[in-house]
Image (cartoon, rainbow, N blue to C red; front, side, top):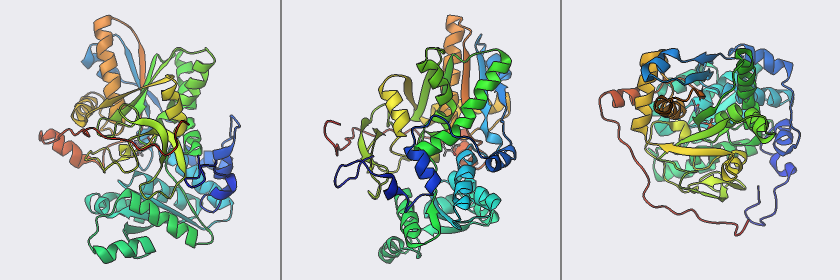
Length: 419
Ligand SMILES: *Cc1c(COP(=O)(O)O)cnc(C)c1O
């Protein structure tokens, strides 16, 4: 990561004002392994962990495929997604450092609710800036966070200079994720004893999510099988990276032939139509420049239901693997994605998250290709969340009202030439 003014690499020290110390250490560390602290394991067991690796036999029958389809069931956590895998670790390290307040932002509310739960379990206060339109459209997520004892501020809020300025211009300002991030950062920096916890894209968030892939490895070992195809959705990239990285290690050592496929929405085509370049991680340009696949940090908020996949960039480590061809990527429109989700609900009984349904779409397409070729591939996708708080999206799909959207031509500015 580079300082946007000097273009020099940012230092570990400069991160410590904003993030808990241990997380900064993990971010910059070149160690290959971090032990999971016993306290975090104790919290993981409640999610529960390990999560099951499920064979989707009814789905296979419906598709009349000789392929075996599995999914890693991350939807069982109390908040309905994989996000507690990192939220619990982050809350634990913050508490251990003696901090008393965690600050963050949330759009659709998946991260906010995971963080609120994790802070409650570790006895930490949480303050969450929630994009105002999302709070109005998804009151359920806001109520959930408040039930865990978190303070939820609709953003823009009166609590920060950024928020007050915007509210003065427009008292009904709908907010945006970029604004909520700016408010959370401003608030954190103004408060001794508080730190900023973040959902995805950073190395440590990906590292914490590798618990998914490590379990999947053991589960396949018990079945005496090896996956041929692993797929999943990418927003910031944390759930998919966590799922595949332990297998990527084996592949880079020549011990696995698995194929890795990252699935993104055609509405935010970071890896399929974007650029691998240095860009800001936030709209307001508070962050360092990060080398990643991006559609550009000024990319307008895309009108899709998979709120977790709206981020303009993708995690640097995953981006590099895609750039080098170790991981392939594809994009889907949301109608095709919800078609897959409906088939999954009818055959397996799981109403999956609009996000995870992107990985599911690829799994189904691959299984159909196997029907034609007769190949008996082992396909596995990461079912990273349930869709029980996204039912209005299913409602639109069921009524035939869901529409696809793709950006026209767009350009991504280059801040650092030739690097
Ligand atoms: C947040 C979220 C995502 C997107 O984040 P990644 O970092 O790409 O994993 C995907 N699915 C669900 C269910 C989420 O909550």
